[in-house]
Image (tube, rainbow, N blue to C red; front, side):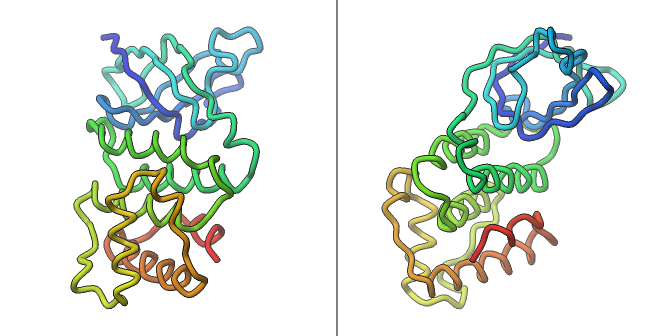
Length: 212
């Protein structure tokens, strides 16, 4: 059975000398993995179309025996080339992708999380890498997972509670105007780290490499 979707590439890895496994985030099919046969050959029809955080329309043929499906065609829509101008952007985007992979099930529709990731990737290179960008992604992601912090019960000062509310409800352009003090950055980092670990059991190790 052949299906069509739009997706963001979360991760790729070699399968053989010539083929590639591509992990997608889609709004309608959820997270899924495909095999791009021959994608590592120089003259492959997939050449230049499959890389981290590329957005594309694609078709796949469902496998009846596994969760690894055959990638048929790819029409590239966005490469997010600006992300490759700073390693900090790629690190933040990779952390977001890892958090999505850890907290969502395979092949379950994820329209809200797809929209969240798409907006995050578009916003990232608009400013130098900043911790509040990840804080906002984490708070929005927690809300989509049904794990939104209880701002009234958590032991936080009124300024931090207000910042968390802003992270939750504001769009990315509005969030770009938020300024944090060093104290607020440290306290928010510690609070969200503890909250994520408590509710998720663990978090991607790369988070610690990007936080002050």
